[in-house]
Image 1 (tube, rainbow, N blue to C red):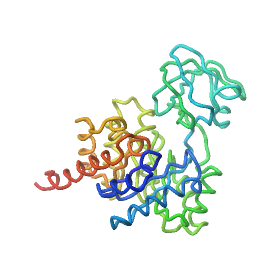
Image 2 (tube, rainbow, N blue to C red):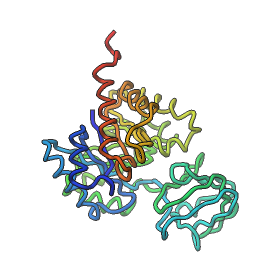
Image 3 (cartoon, rainbow, N blue to C red):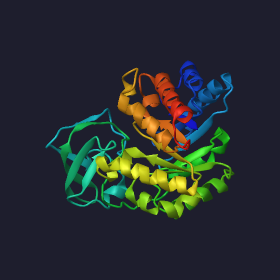
Image 4 (tube, helix red, strand yellow):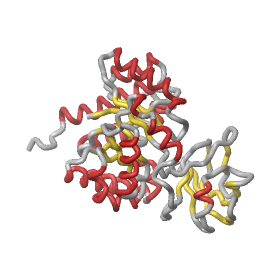
Length: 330
């Protein structure tokens, strides 16, 4: 079983990464929604060095931008207050032009994995006004989605293509593609890898909306591993339905003999606490019990206060399941 930690300012020091590998981490993820591969190469060097110190050959995953929509860069952060209006686009919070071209009055916008919500009141070619339904603090480059709507976006961005050109040079072993919708998305990624001598780099298909869930059987053979990415997937369905969707995807993968990963908020409380909640360790245990081949931490290691401790609890809980559970023993 693989255990991944997301690289970020909280963990990208040699002593911290060393402790994470000692705790059982087997690989790292670099989120390229926030920058280019070249800009974060130093993080990879530190991770490889720390892994070698404990005799581990680390796996390196890069998470592309892909079809995922995010707000753009703006100074500082914006406080969105419930029942107030907020402007997106020109003279407001920057959003992708491809979203501006397709958004309509009445659509709901979910921001930062659904932490905030707004409803579009007016829209023109370069600006939209929305009413805040659920407030919060919005930071640059956070996710934005339109539940129940299909926003047509390319499988790979120009930045993705630039990063794929140098992926092999930096020792990348796997590429995560967000919001996989069809076979063509994965074919597009495979072509780009082959054009850049990355034939042996594995493809991790992230399932983040119902289009991906419904098309899973068709594109599953083209992926090396399926990723149940519960952040945006939890925006695509009511949260109380998310566990059933997760189990459905896991069951399909098991039947097909396809490895799958579970990710997002596995130890969310440990961004600010040294120990997890009982619910969180139960979540990890159940993911392992259901046959996940990989588990990943995101904010817990990237920006959290206890990255090494979080990795320790992730690994120990999953290993306890694999060693002591009764699954398959009757």
